[in-house]
Length: 201
Image (cartoon, rainbow, N blue to C red; front, side, top):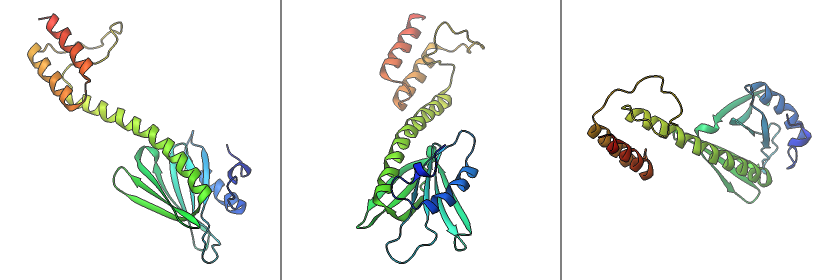
């Protein structure tokens, strides 16, 4: 668990971190840890209750104080649902924009540049990780929809719990070709399965 001292490395206001960190930690689920907090710093006027962006290993959380800082409004996005985090630098600060896989968009302005860059780097790393997880999940969904008793990359030494229904070899080949065309199977997987089916005919 990060301490307040570890969270003020880019000149965040310690008093703001001291107030926000316990609230975010209360909000965290099991095995979720706060990794970073960026604190807004407005260039025009005095901002007694700045907005913040907290990064955890599971979510990105926008924190906006309400009622003169007496309460906090949390809006969070699971990294799995974040499609893109964009940073636009201005003269004094940066704007962070979060776009979700469902097309939703949220922005926060006046984030100091050093904090925005650190936040952006972390977000890019999480995006890459989750993008691959989403790709794998989509592939599994497509394979499940295609179905039909075709098992891909199953080690031969693992016992099959249920017998696959007997299927016409031509139907199997047609399904395999369809899966290849959809991008579910690679050409190598298709060729191997095709050769296996033809050898049993």
